[in-house]
Amino acid sequence: MNLREVKYVDSSGIASLVEVLKEARNKEKRLVLFGLNAAVRDVLQLTRLARIFEIRETEEEALQA
Picture 1 (cartoon, one colour):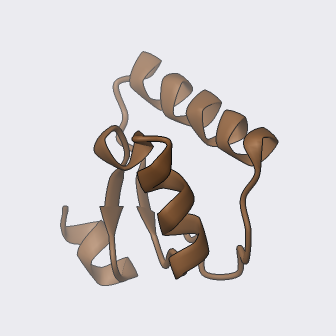
Picture 2: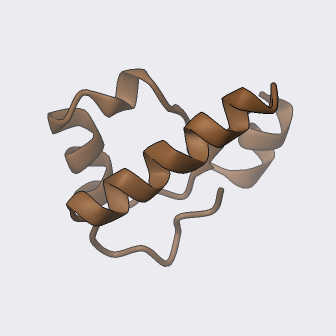
Picture 3: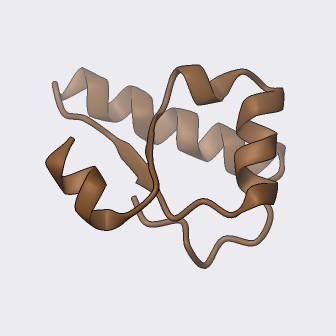
């Protein structure tokens, strides 16, 4: 999932990402996030969700993961 245009994420955004992740896992699919800016990455780290999500820097890395 390309998050390059996302400048900020709040609790509702986090909840949406978690729902998408749960749905992907239920369908035995993977969700890879990429293009995170520092603010979004910080929120995921502070909430300890960076450990749960697969995060890559670029689309190419996400596709190869």
